[in-house]
Amino acid sequence: GWYADKSIDITPALGFSATYQLSGIVDYPKSNKVVMKINTAFSMDYYVQFNRKSGFNSGTREGGNQVMITKAGGQGEGYNESELVAKLNAGGSYYLADISGTITVNSINLTADPAVATVTVSRALPPPTITPASCEDPNTPSSTARRFQFEI
Image (cartoon, rainbow, N blue to C red; front, side, top):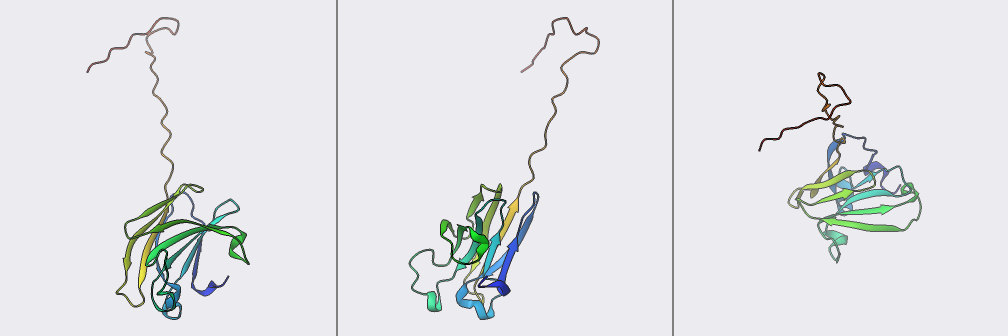
């Protein structure tokens, strides 16, 4: 891909939670990472980037200094149409329905050099399956009626 040396590529499993720092593409030379790809089992994957409104990107009209989340196919190779699904400020979250995950923007620090957005990606474990306890009295034959008493 275009930013292979400054990208994060993850396939989060259930129970996964990790925090990353993203810089804007305008800070590419001095940044650590500028784009994150979140793989899904479907034809469309998620891409997360910090749309830093500075330098050659100072005139941006949409999502300036926000974390942008897009969906696109093609594994990030070549040209593919994409869909902007979220623009997040610090404290914002977006639910990734395809993978039952969440992207949360913990903070956006515009005074850091380079400016960074701190983002957490997580996939919760499913709730435990609860097996109902038996309502049968072991001293009562199974063919008889059962009585229950509720106290409120």
